[in-house]
Length: 234
Image (cartoon, rainbow, N blue to C red; front, side, top):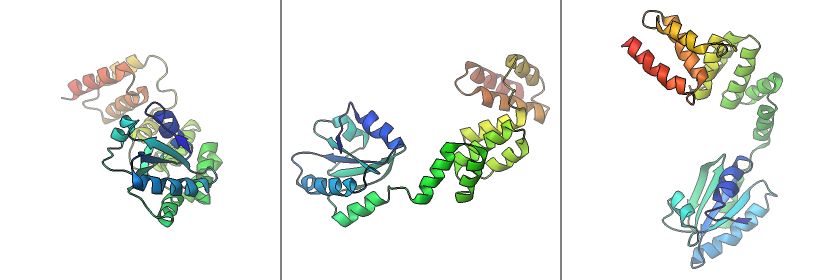
């Protein structure tokens, strides 16, 4: 259990939740139900042997945290995983309900194995991860990237069709279509040459868009060339 303040919330809760689920208990000294719920939370979470962490926030002393959760009444309890709210409840709860709430946060053996395989990151591990969870986005993207590097672009493109489009899938698809060396050399010259044909040549337009995808949104050329593409098309 850790007492969290406005100043430590980011490190102790948001960042910590990427490593282990964090239960945030918003309470105040004057709150009777809080004094009832607090010991139950501590007992149940202590029984997880570190698989779940309890963060207690005094709402009177830390108004920023309360505002972030839009708390209107206490006790208010929120579970944080991977930097996001995963679950929660308002008001005092019996021990059995708190136990169910906390247990839902603990990964199963299969989920733990899946995460370990994804973190390993090699092709064999990622293929094994997809046997456990065929639509796992992290495993799909990770394996697709490896396939592109190995020259298996068609398999990579087929693989990422399993999951909904995202910034990651668009990047991998662009890499598969253009090649791993696409952003090397004078990419401005490539884009300028393609720009001449984007209106009438579908392949040129796709390659142009793919190159911008590989440059990424932080590259100032991306926005500039997107404007040029719009002008060329319309």
